[in-house]
Image (cartoon, rainbow, N blue to C red; front, top):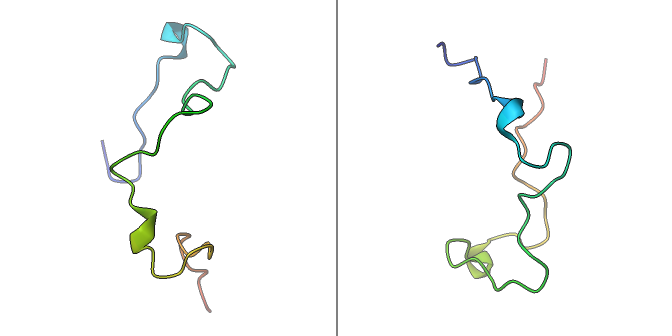
Length: 54
């Protein structure tokens, strides 16, 4: 598999097809692996790949 290819996902193994069930449950606590207090620009969506400037 090259770097640009994504692995195929077997959708037939999804127990709830079409249901977005990957989100945290309502009222769940904060994920300890994500520390938003260390964000240098809180509230600024700066995670996207920059546009190509030609």
